[in-house]
Length: 153
Image 1: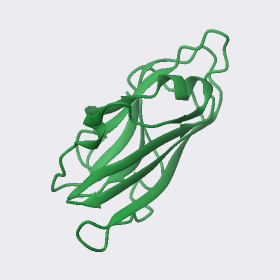
Image 2: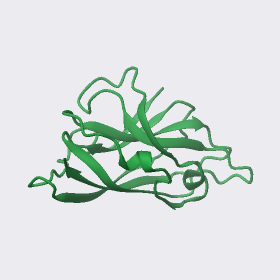
Image 3: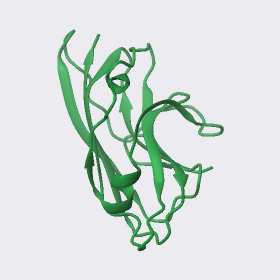
């Protein structure tokens, strides 16, 4: 298992935090996929800050599987551990929704179940990422992005 990180999830770029209780922050971050992800690989894309809950969520992706029989599949969610912790043994802690059709053909997708909006805040930062459950038939270099709106509880 490989964890693919961007500058935000590596800690090189600050992630915004709501200024007051109940205030919303919306931010978009992305991760470039330059090599084909294997089954079990994770693309760590963003951070849900400590004490915050998800208000809205959108995944956007380029077409990352250019084969005629598209097979790339995965789910987006909150990952185990903390952003500054070891990537060894990292896994999906809370699945928010399936993004298979978006990473295969490109496009955008919002959560399609209420559970994605009912994740309780925790007193730790959490990584948001995509865990791949099937490899691409014909991988194509591209980007996966998320726009997440969150607020303090």
